[in-house]
Image (cartoon, rainbow, N blue to C red; front, side, top):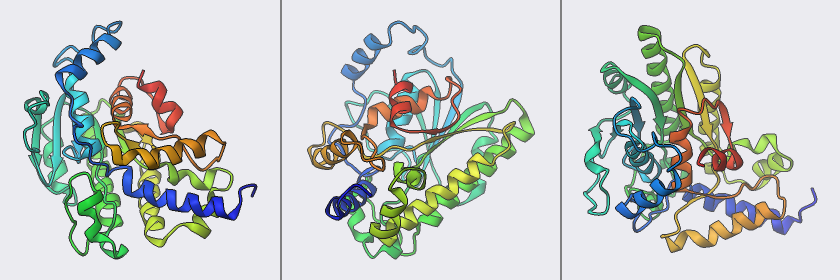
Length: 313
């Protein structure tokens, strides 16, 4: 490899920071405000249908009260989708700056129980499913208590919670439920949007295998194994039933969260100097817009930062 060992060690640290941060940064104000609406409406003025209400169908967001899932739910409601959010926390605390809160149907439930997802889909008329459930530091990492500082919700998972259970199992349940839903009702393929991680693609880029094999801590390897397992399951779903859309963001940041800027800068520099295993960071607003727009733009498969930028426009 062309990079020095010191550089690779630094990147290993950055990779760890990314795993903490991609779903964890807690912006002081990450809700969609009325000012945000004005700016987005001006940007999207050429497409008059973007902000029409109730004309685009119904979507299910698993993990819709979290950092990314919540922003996706807000963006989808803003763009005219009827949104059902499923999470163990249900409806988040009311934010006076967030006018979309009352436009989302928040449900309390555990996606580890497949029947919970099946019952919601049985209500009918769903046009897309988003999976935004994740865990940063599982019980086996030895770092579980740090979730209260780095996770989007600030909650600490159960002592026996694992990446396999929280990420893989919930996604597998959702995929199976979605396949059954389309098989019964027809009208496929149904868009299934999964949030993975840029590092899940390390085996496919120069130097990525070395970084993962040599410099990546065990807990991060297990984190990526769970993500890849879901990716493979989704891509092997019958094409007549589901249309898989897999977003692989690097660090997800928000400009109103100062703590996110140092790791953001490290990723940006790594990408700019051409390190193939470091993707450029994306803002939570850009990613959520891209995810919602992927429903109608008929994309399929893996979406990295360049595709995310394009979809968000």
